[in-house]
Length: 596
Image 1: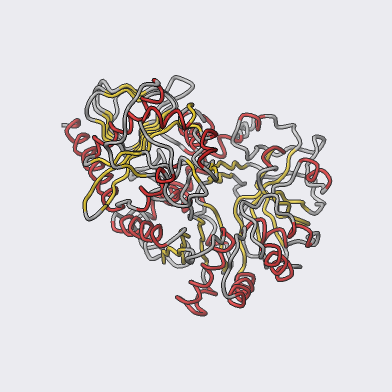
Image 2 (image 1 turned 90 degrees about the vertical axis):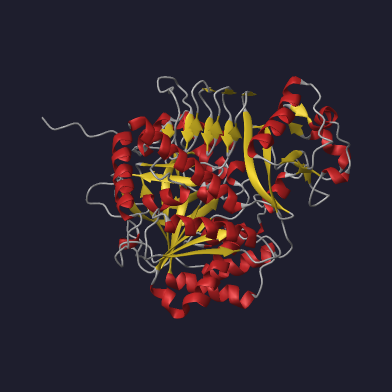
């Protein structure tokens, strides 16, 4: 009797673990030509972020955490207007041309869009979302290592060109033993994941040409007729992008949530990463060089991919519904890109047994690391990774997640919380659904449920000081108002911001905010105390948060205060890395002592 075929989760787990093992063997080792990327590029929002990324890359290479013999680069966006990830792509092509000349035409290049300050997941703001820690590996994997591991099979089956991806998503897939993902066709080639229609409204959706093959294998090579960017349900049906209920259903959905378990729902194929061959990259570079300077935001997915395929029309160039900031030049630039790329093929590799996970918000971060049993199984995520922490909560629906931290005995962690790069003393309690990052709490403390605490090392006037972000995990740091009289619409940890100011003894005026005075938000509010030590910083900001939760006063007038925006400007990357190294050494020491 034939053995039962492994279910989707088992095959995904086995495929993922094989890639992780293969990457683990390459860490700290020179890689043979053709077996790995020739060049890996990280984009950065500005020069300060570029320096922070360079420091972390250098440390990883020194510690043998990355494959050797690879050209690693960080390219910052030019000073001036925001240019989006499409503009960052064009800028990166220019840098590659300047560094390598014609030689880069023979390279396989991985380009990871890593710019931005992660306002929806601020524990990634200071050091970058591509360096977000994962509860996996020893040394700890960050998103960079995971990306390199998951794409480990690509370079050896890729013609010279560039693979474009983002820093805050995870793509898992499984294919048959004889199936190979090849990126060797002219034009663009994109991965496509079966997803429910709700996911399609927030992603790119492929309208595929009809296929003669009625079988639905794990991997199919298809031609895309047209690409839709964040379409409505009606648009997906009208464009024939939807795979109907009567058709054979793919094995998995790429939504990463519980609604994806209904395998008989209508589905669409959504985007994740894409590849462009060298000729296409060269065409875009020539366009950028002719343009001179970019003064509007270009989207690498919406503005490049919508121009591709035989069904593409120029109509999308005037649709600015999904644009965060509409500049007058945008439509004209889009039209030029459309005419530049029109007629270029868009090849699609449909991965019918695949998952797409996004980890870009506090809620996604908490869910995937503490409650998502599927991702935990598929990726092998741990509840305790390179940490000293008593007990566990493996049997419950939610677990705690502790990453490179020391949690002393008698410290109480409530399931559903994540602790990273922190040291918590014996009389500390952490409420559920909380994120604790970079903190050192020595004395007795009770961290309320649904709290976010993240301490940054700062360098101000030549002195080392500390400040801790503290707020509710559901707070919207991006929400802004234009005038002081509208501050009542901002919420801090469940309380109106004006009421919070009263509790803190602070006056409502423009000096309360940093940066642009016509964009007032929790991100720019100068409310976080500056302190001489890690422990003092956490205690002061925790009292700020407790005052709001208990509706009891805690005056902040005696403290020097900074906004999150200012904290990032003054951040001391080297000191934060030293703190992490100190934790790593202390964890190793305590482990050795425990083994004696």
